[in-house]
Length: 89
Image (tube, rainbow, N blue to C red; front, side, top):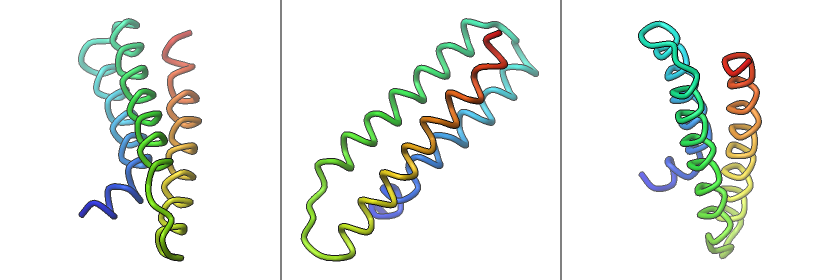
């Protein structure tokens, strides 16, 4: 289960942010809630990058898992920031 979380962690954060923005826009559209959700997701992505950076590099699978997780977390950082821009303007 840990390997799946490491591999999909960034994409899970991105998905949570995506659906959270739509839920906030539908239920209670307040800019400060969007900011709080976006900051929470960005912190989660940064924590994931920190966690992945400290994973061991014992074999080829560990190196591959680390590179996929880093790519997913970086993509999530970009996507969360991009999705929050229209809601904040």
